[in-house]
Length: 210
Image 1: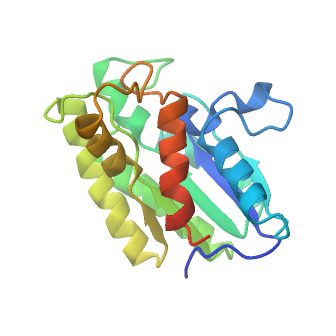
Image 2 (image 1 turned 180 degrees about the horizontal axis):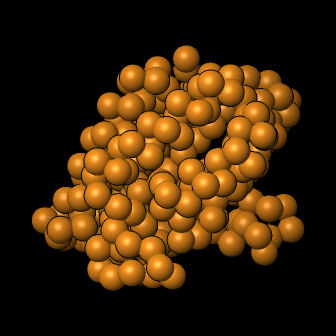
């Protein structure tokens, strides 16, 4: 497998609110985040390639909820390229339950992620892009960040196992937080600002092989 983009590819983006970015309220269904930016850059850079982009991110989702809707929102769509960014909410719930959701321990997160990928591969999805979740706190030693570092390492391993592509959004954001602290990369230490979304898009495009 690889994630090199081909003319006419249907590219599906999956994830939580960072991917969602208001897509259900936007006319094109893409939202205002990194998915929209990637779509615009690809169209401007490769106007003859006819990429088709679908955003199915849903705010608040953990790997648990993503599994529940995986058939309808992924397998039935049958994308040529599947991009997944999931994990922030699995960890964020450590701060308290939200809408009945609770923290997802690492072992359960790993099992959920493997189930997502196994089902995708079984459905014939051969090009997979796995994106590390962004930072939650500026403090790299904060407990939530340590949980996400562990999950990012897993995602990188899974990208190798499933012969996909790993996009180091988390690592890039952490570096920029240190090198350019005056820039507001997140609005609430979790959700990206315009600059944060642009940084994710800028990291995704070359990694995905376009």
